[in-house]
Length: 122
Image 1 (cartoon, rainbow, N blue to C red):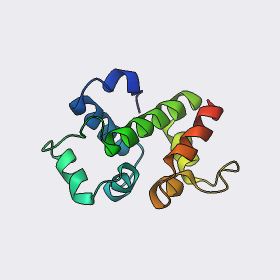
Image 2 (spheres, helix red, strand yellow):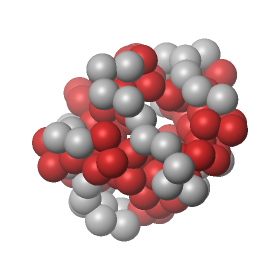
Image 3 (cartoon, rainbow, N blue to C red):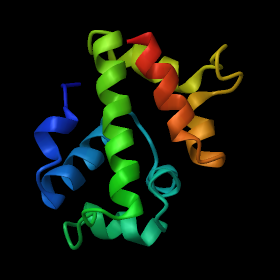
Image 4 (cartoon, one colour):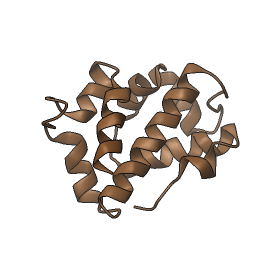
């Protein structure tokens, strides 16, 4: 696991798209889950993965991707890049959220709430 900072990738659609895909792989998040988080279809994630498309700047998926990368960055620094601890935080019930963060992002589209809690942790 390595650090990916939003400030390092937000300059281009290609860089941001690649960062989102790398984070997804590092966090063992399914493409279908990523599609929900970014407000896209599963087929769109396939296009991104095959480098046939990028996340368009100033679109809803772009803004959600920025939050997704910021969340990863917050968790990376909170847990010193410890993959097991980061994955555990995402998949374990969080007392402040009263839910599992990953499920909130995927099922209820509440990445904002999850990010706010991660920012406080950091």
